[in-house]
Image 1: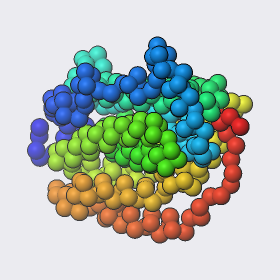
Image 2: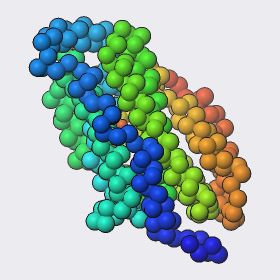
Image 3: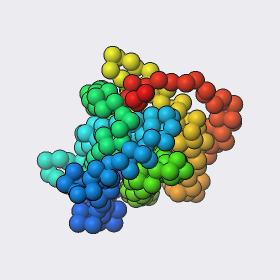
Length: 326
Ligand SMILES: [Fe+2]
Ligand SMILES: [Fe+2]
């Protein structure tokens, strides 16, 4: 690559793409040893199926309304995976036809992620507390409506987004796991714990991609980080809705998530701080004037956001979601 001038996105991606297969080997697990939903939930062919089903439903009977709502939205978010794969496949430097290293990464990542929706969806079906048609229709809506994370087809911005988002899903699945455990639900707890561990591994991968780009093209990577944080990291289920075109679901859902502490404004700030540390933003060299300004903005941002989040009131409105059976 030309060292004098900033390299283009394409050059950087091509260069890193050569290592993308190594990334897949390091951050994705072999399919042979990956867990599958069938190992976590009873099979209809098991002799013990009826008894196992009873256990699942007894445990689910104790889950709180807010926790169920969060679980449904987590599941819908996972089920909207076609949106994310399509989005990533369209990034500059990623070539579906050539099936370059990056495309193999995306396919491998998608294939692992797909198990999350499968497992959670099956749990919702078995637990007996969900209006499945409502839940399925919301999933269909979300896939149809897509999303817009504001990163367009820029790999730098999108890798900021995915680094952030994998960490956010790790937190929310992990918290659901511990709340489920507190509410006596060992099956759900184990499942969400396993999903959370996948998310943590994926987060490591995306954080590595950003770190590598930061070495090759620091100024542009810094500007991309700043831009994504100015736009705010939106949740993939931003366009969530329920049947009958009820479109306020996402706000009501985030209120539930805040209230039960599954994903809060403080978590958003903590993720940002961890990324600033991870990429050693303070010590990045080779920045131009605008890159320096972007760095200043980023370094001050956690404190600013903390002040804002301290002023936020915890929402106490009770919501009714069509997904949950009375
Ligand atoms: Fe996932
Ligand atoms: Fe993920």
